[in-house]
Amino acid sequence: MPTLSDLVARHTALDEADLDWLHSLVSDWQLLADLSFADLILWAPLLGENGWIAIAQMRPTTGPTVYHDDIVGSVAARGERHLIDTAWNERRICREGDPDWSTGVPVREETIPVRRAVDNGEGRFLGVIQRSTNLSSARTPSRLELTYLQSASDLAQMVAEGRFPFSGEEPILVRSPRVGDGLLRLDRAGRVTYASPNALSAYRRLGLHADLVGAELGRVTATLCYSDEPINEDLMIVASGRAAKETEVESGGTIVQLRAIPLIVGGGRIGALVLIRDVTELRRRERELMTKDATIREIHHRVKNNLQTVAALLRLQARRLQVPEGREALEEAVRRVGSIAIVHETLSHAPEEFVDFDEIADRVIAMAGEVSAAEAAVMPRRVGAFGVLPSLIATPLAMALTELLQNALQHGRPRRLEVLVEPALDRLNVTVWDDGRGLPEDFDLDKSTSLGLQIVRTLVEGELSGKLTIEPREGGGTHVGLSIPLPAA
Image 1 (tube, rainbow, N blue to C red):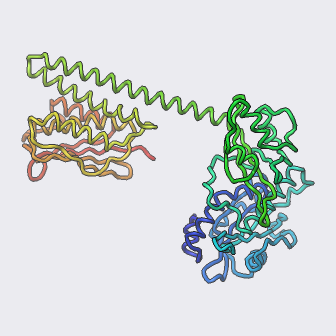
Image 2 (cartoon, helix red, strand yellow):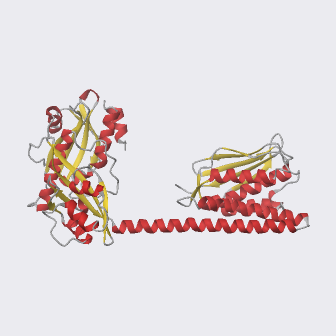
Image 3 (spheres, helix red, strand yellow):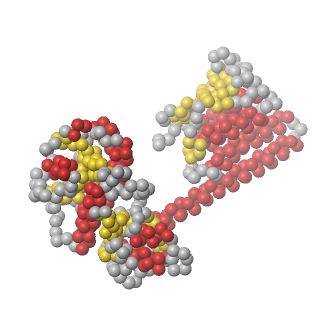
């Protein structure tokens, strides 16, 4: 399905500022759909204004939908939808007309012109919202429904006047309160004129025992949550409905999120809506995840420290050995332990079990070059980027690189040594090549007794389920290829 940006760019004359306004509107118009108990379709004028194209659609969560199929991308000619034409031509909200029974279900159609506020104050009209209400479940409206509908009418007027969405405000988060979570309607003085059952329940959990209707919301909330500490300034702004902002309050272990939507109609503020959501359980789970994440990072940090201690002990033992073969074996063990420690050190700073492997590869390459500086006057280098890899791949891959680089530097005596990285969609292809002595004429990977190559083969084929190839390089030297499958994103 084409996106709003695609449809606007291909089929309309709207500019970048218009598109930004429409994105802001669509990101927050679930509020209007829920308050209206109605489907919303955003129509934009086609190039040449000889028709309309539907560029966005929203269904209500508070009532039955009218459109079970997607309307986005549909085109209507001028004259085909009278109410859309009228709202556009006369720059006003259109509510006239009898219910439409063409689909077998009574549907009330309304249209709202979409206006963007501009600096000169005149505004620029961008399109029309079609609001379609399914009347099949119509009944005598309750106090809640009447409040919703009145609030929807005020918001629709704000859309037509270019006052909604709120210009210059930060985008509303996906997890902001919704209409069904809890709603308060305030008058101009910040007093509650209506409280939905869910909103009242949230305040009961904060410790409220009196009635909320008729109370000044800011003062009540401050008394419940800030009796022994300075009052949060954002709270008073949100609770009075003076600005489109969000805040959270906490009392007695209950955490409540508040979002204010000022109602500005005809140039003056007539009141506000305050959406309320009890986020106690959500915040508790977030804190548990943060604690678990910190614990995992601490474990990686301690593993790194322990590995460094093991490496230091092995290095100390190697210095005391008089047998060259034994000393060399311990020094190789030090390098292998060190490559694992590098991965755990990186994981100790990462928020998830994923690491930027380029940093690890560069440290492994530098470590191999420093250790072999006396044997080979060459510093290995990396070409290409590994990117972010899971830790389950990072650890064996780091060890395999350590072995391959060390083997090339010790036995190949190269003048050039490179690690070439070629990531694909589902695989990681790595080539380690050098221009050194090359392989023995009778070399056979399956029959090789080299401990380093046996380790690499076990890591690549056993742990990483990849493929390992070692062959002579054209022009001299050795070409080692690793092909490692990557997990699906």
